[in-house]
Structures are given as structure tokens and as C-alpha cells.
Image 1 (cartoon, each protein chain N blue to C red):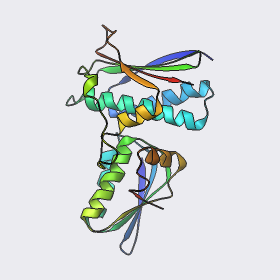
Image 2 (cartoon, chains in turn orange, green):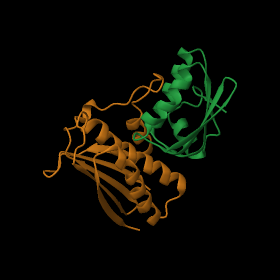
Image 3 (tube, rainbow over the protein chains, first blue to last red):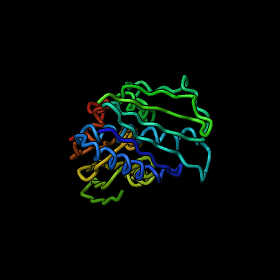
Image 4 (spheres, helix red, strand yellow):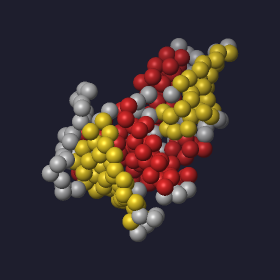
Length: 137
Length: 99
């Protein structure tokens, strides 16, 4: 089944629950099994959290929105994240070493564990950052 | 997220409920860390936690590390399957005290 759905969310930690609800609703339509659905929802929520936490670091009470677009075509799942925060330097993104036990630094690691690929594209004029997560299902 | 605390001797059991994400981590820490810093043995019961992300994992790590500093311990109990998967993805099942 092919599908393409997108939704805008206020850039705020309080939106993360809505992000998960939106994602679960889309994955329900695709009849994904619960374990896979849980993993994909986690990856999406971590990427959205990174926008709130990092792209909008130091910005209080923004009225900006981020957009999340979930598409499935020919069993290739693609999830796009669009925001107008600080430009991300993808070379600077790295998760902490797992044996260096401390709070933080795991979100990107989870995304990499769950998805096949995560790429920041410079193809948008309307937005600042465009992250694309892909996974072959 | 909601919570309930029960006390028995030097053991405080915190029953967390709901989804633990970045939006509620401060609230979770405000509940758990003062108990740990007071030297209580803290049991975190997660049977009703349906979702936890990296922010929630950070709360577990911080609680565990504060407990070591305070010469006590945090025990994570009745972890739901979905949360256990996240703990295992972070390779923390041997680090945290899971029961």
C-alpha cells in the first residue's frame, strides 16, 4: 500500500505526543506489526525531539512549526522532517559512545539503529533543515 | 505521565504511568532524584509506562548515577516489553538494576 501524509506541529516538547499519535495513525493504515511500528514511532519522535532540542536550542516559545511527512512507495518508507531552526551541520552530529554511560546523546543512535539511512538534504528554500529517514520494509 | 509513591522502610517505590518523553523528564526527575539524594533505595515500577524515548532513558541513567553517589540504589522493576526494548537498544540492561 502506498501512502503519503504530512502534518505540521508547533516546535515544542509538548508536541511530541501529537507527533507520536500522527505517526501511529499512519502506520496503522499500513498494517505494520506492533514491534516495527513502535521502533518507527521512536525514530520519528527522536528526530522531532532533536529539532526542538537542537535546531531551536535557546529559543523559547517559538511560534514556528515543523512538518513531518511520512511516505511509503514500493515498500520504501521515507520520513521527511522540515524545520526553520538553526542550520544543522550534519558532520557535527554524532551520538555518544555507548560505553560512556551518561544521560543524553542516544536519540541519534536510536535513529541509526532503527532506520536504514538518515540524510540532511539541501533541497529546500521554504525550510532551513530537511532530514530524510528511509527504511526498506 | 502520572505517578504514585509508596514508602516502606527505607524503600520508596515510584509507580510511573503513561509515556515518558522530553516533555515530562523534568517532572520525573523532580519526583525521583530527591528520594535518591535523601539516601532512599528507590524502586521505579514501569509496568504502566507504555513508551519511553532517549529522554526517559536519560532519567534512568541519571537516577542510577545519583544513587551510586548517594551510596544507595535504584531498582527498575516490572519493565513493560516496549520500554525494555529501548533499554536494550541502549545496551543498558547490564548497567541498570532491572528486576
